[in-house]
Structures are given as structure tokens and as C-alpha cells.
Length: 242
Image (cartoon, rainbow, N blue to C red):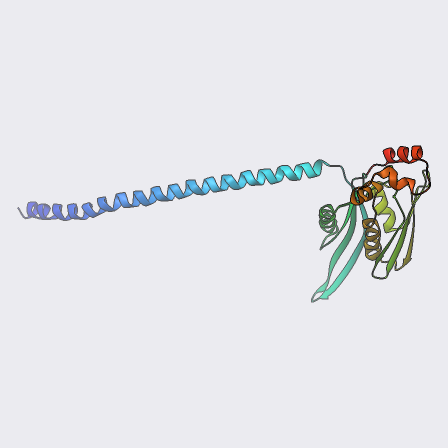
């Protein structure tokens, strides 16, 4: 009898304990469902980010599909003495162009040479500018560029002249797509200042077409002021292209 009473008394206690447990069970389930919903929402967000990354990746693929001319102009190595030895770093200067009138330069620093070159190339692609070319081979007019202690002079040249330029300036005109040009550098031989002075001179280049649009005139009217006949000025105006 004692055992039966004990069992009878213990049964309600177990039931009482079970009741809250059953009550807590759905709570945990609800929280679990909420967690699952959050996870689903998070998955949706991650999916959205993935789609945005895919779009960005597509733009990068389009940029990489364009054929660019890359010229390594200069690499500088610097060292820092630390406890236990020396720590080396590298700085690269790169010029990038499409050979059709667009070019840019960039500077990159890293502990390794390939990484420095890749950083400089990426910076050069972002800083590309367009320069109007005459007949797609030379400049429209002469120009002067100045940066720091560097001074450069660029002049248009007839067909067959070639690129008369040395050092960093040659890399700029080769990547730009210029086939005939005469240049002269005065002052510093620092490649960084020479490159910046060259781009300063190229930034001042204008074409007769852009000048005619700015002044509200025709290209033939501007060319006739040089003493050319009407027929010759009209022919030259038709041949001029950006």
C-alpha cells in the first residue's frame, strides 16, 4: 500500500512538472521558428549581396575585356632598418592606354613587386583621360607642360617622323597611340615629375572641332583664317576627327 500511495502521489508531481515543460516546448518551437525565419531573411540578404556582387563582377569583366597597353616606367625600392634586419618596400609607376587617344598613369606601393605593379595599374585605369589626336597619329598643336621642376615641350609632326621622346615620355605616347611627335624635356629627370608634366601638356590639347563648337562656328571657317582656300579648308574640315 505504501508503494501504491507513493506512486499515486508521485504521478501528479510528474504531471505538474510535465505541464510546464509542455508549455515551454511550444515557446522554444516558436523561438526556433523565428530563428529559422531570421535565417531565411538573412539568406535572402546574402542572396541579394551575391546578385550585386555578380553585377559588379560583370562590370569588371567588361573592363578587363578592353585591350589596354601597360607600360612599367619605374620601380623604386626602399628599405627600413628594424630590429632583426631590413624591411624592403617597392613603389611602381605604370602608364596605361588603349592606343586610341586614352591614357593614364598610376602609382602603387607594396612589400612585393607584383603587388605594387597591380596597384599602380589599377590606379592608372581609374585616372585615364582622353586626348584629341589629329588623323589618329599626332597632336593637333604644340604644347607646354610644367610640374615641379619638370618642363616638357610637345610638338605635332608630319607622318613618318615617329616618336622622338625618351624615358617616361615615350611610354606615355606609345600607350596613347601617337605615332608621330617631337618632344623635349628640360629640368628634372625624375620620372614622376616628367610624367605629370607630360599629362599637363596633353591636357591642354584641343581640336578644331571642339573649338568650333565652343565658338559657334564651322570648322572650315576656322581653317580658312590660315589663308587656305575654301575647297582646301572644306576638305581638311571633313578629314578632321577627334
